Amino acid sequence: MTGVAGAWRRLRGLPRALYEDLWAVPVDPQPAPGRPGAPVWRPVFAMLLSLAAAVIALVHVYDLVPPGAGIPGYASLLVVCQSGALVAGLVRPLHAWWVSLALMCVGVRISEPVLGAGELFPTASEIALVSGALFLLALRVPPRRAVTALVVTLLATSLAAQATTRNHAHALDRASLIIVTAAAIGTALRTLRVSRTELAEQSELTAEERARRTLLEERTRIARELHDVVAHHMSVISIQAQVARHLVADPTPELLANLADIRGNAVDALTELRQVLGVLRSEDSGADAAPHAPQPTLDLLDELVGRVRATGVEVSAHTTGASRPLPPGVGLSAYRIVQEALSNVLRHAPGARARVEVCHHAAAVTVRVTNSAARTTTAPRTGPGHGLLGMHERAAMLGGDLTHGPTPGGGYEVLVTLPLEDPS
Image 1: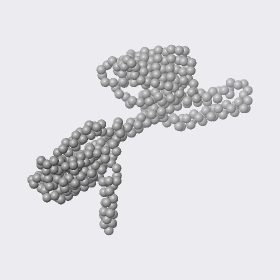
Image 2: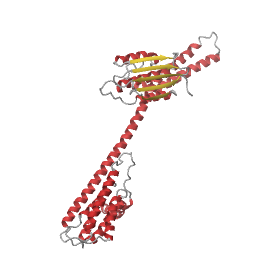
Image 3: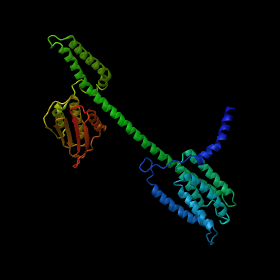
């Protein structure tokens, strides 16, 4: 009983489904130029289709008039409408397909008295016009709707041919084969276009997700390094607060209470910092050779340049301005930016010369890393591609400014300015 009820429900909904598939539901919109799946060949295809429609119209008009007779106005109007419907299928494929079917039925009544006794019906021009309209429709609708339109087209063609007294048996076989082939090619091309569009969109989403994940990884790495710096200062504050009470001969109770509060707050902050961020160190402890070593600063620039020189890269380092101790965060970020810039030289410009310039200003430090064009013919090594992202994150964290780009000589330049004080 349930199966019968379901079948009856589907049968009752069939007219509604046919109405939506063959009229109400719009076809796929054409992708905008430059978007994934945009048909760059569409102007050329429109020109070729217009030319083919004109040729078919010239051939088809002689199917509507007796041999040697003049061409009446109604015949010219019919072929113009049929050819126009075919070209209009580029913009309105669903409506153009319906018009083509209707005009085919009109052409049946006109061409039947004109065709010779041995000529086949439907004619080749009628088949070409209907198949072309169905092909354009199949390019813009899902396969289920294309199959529905194909069935309707075959039924309409068969009924139109059966309504005549001409020899239509072989013609129907030929027409059916051509119509099915047109619908199949259109459906296949649409499926290919949709697949490419989805692949391009998925690639964009994957690239965005990769960039987002890379950004989080860089921020995690920066947070792990700054954790060491902050933990060191909090430990110093705690120790100084504990020692300060012994530096005063007769400390007052208020002073002792304040020092105890300072030390307690420092210890509590250090404990919470280790609970929240300490795990970052343990997660990547295997990635670094010395996970608990002091964080580097620009004081170790010569050592970094020496390691790069050992790989065969010609590197020079120059420092200008009055050198001074840098805040831990600034020194660490400047060192990491230089390190990443030189790593990019190794990966992307093999054989190039590199130059590192550090300039100390009154309120900022400027680091400039440049390299010449690659001098070797071997393919450069490709990295994960997020070194510049990490540089931007470090500069933005300190309120600095980072620029990078190619130089006129074919090399590359990275320039960063880091303020020595909190920009806020």
